[in-house]
Image (cartoon, rainbow, N blue to C red; front, side, top):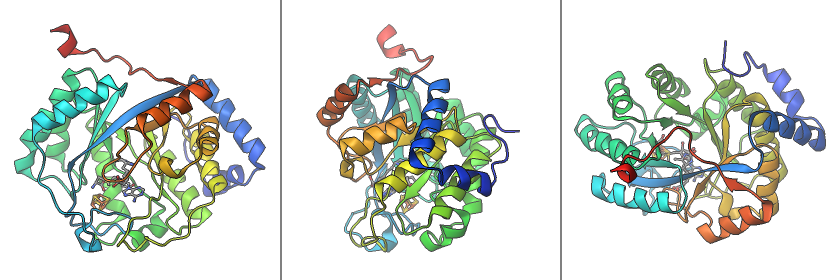
Length: 326
Ligand code: SAM
Ligand code: DTB
Ligand code: SF4
């Protein structure tokens, strides 16, 4: 039995997805209001702790060594640098700090530094999140014991479309890591990317897989592809904004208590499109002018949008700041 909705079928999800848009939005907003304050949006900040030179071949990603991108590979950055960046993010209102690495999986030699990053950010009173690729049983326990709250690991698309986008790992590998993370007691953040040339059915199947996990993910990031030069998806046809909004609404209805994150691609979205996504049930964003490597709206732009819409930043639950108390 899942926490939210057990056993979604493709047929049931497709039926919702295909409803007249006003009916779909009304249902999504009703579900949203039953579970969240509709005027609150959670704010996460991302930091790339290891950039470029990744061994995987994800067709959308500028950080894959196989995509011939000009992005040079960096080493894992210093713990102190991570902590000083995290302090700035907290001052700007972020309640969750997400550290991302361009790895297939972390190496044993990196674990001490990763543990120190989690402990340090947690001591500032922020929720911690990491996205480091695949994890083994030992690594999930080390990160859990350090206090890691969330692990981001996207399934990205449907099982059927997966091998068109990534060939160096399988959809099943992704699910294995998600299961390990959940079983260790770390909250799961998992979603995908829209606009990679997939069909409606692939987007719907991706949500069916997420909603039917033994527990729906706590966070569901929905990214709009940001086409990257020198990648196989550099020139893919952009997705229609209404098709994007439909998937946000469907995610809200299928995973009523999850945070649905309007993730990459906001810098290309109008205020009206973002407002429609919030109405459809998105209630989390990445803040700050850079995601991992790609651009995101400036802080002032987001604050002006929040003011126009009457949206307030969501507070983190149950987090106290040891640094402030000391
Ligand atoms: N290497 C780790 C992994 O793949 O899990 C963590 C970092 S990876 C960059 C995190 C996620 O960012 C990917 O799973 C993908 O969903 C998203 N992403 C990467 N490049 C993107 C792009 N160009 N446009 C939209 N989303 C992107
Ligand atoms: C997610 O789903 N989106 C974020 C986060 N998880 C790690 C990453 C977006 C990356 C966009 C491309 C870039 O910045 O390089
Ligand atoms: Fe590597 Fe992650 Fe980019 Fe794939 S998405 S190439 S695993 S950094």
